[in-house]
Length: 176
Image (cartoon, rainbow, N blue to C red; front, side):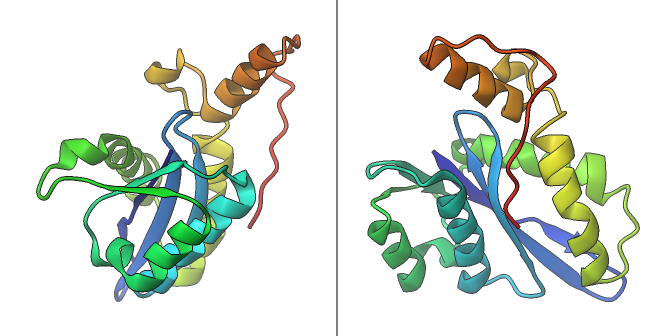
């Protein structure tokens, strides 16, 4: 289910880094964190947000690339403590993490390259809006029947519970 990824975001004098955990089923960004450093702490912060948001059952598959932050002792301990099965992409094969790579392309093309970020604070104030309100709630995905992730999840949950839904009356719980 979760698929982490890290984009590099250029600011005026340096880079900042974004760790994102995606739900593979719905394409929804369920956890993320920003930092001036790309390290295990950044990945752990995004993972913690995803766990708090989803409360996944034991046995959920956590797939990532082979970045050192995902193989780090503390990250692996956190995954095992939450009952995740650990899966990593084959070395040098970007297709194994295609959903995360697609998210990154979308994020950069539709927000990062258009934003004129000067500081980490600029990124911190604008990127959550894009992730939570635009990507999760408005951006259509062909793999989801041309629905945004939030709507797809709501419709899927209603179908599982045999409940009627009204399109356009979705709510979102955001945890930041």
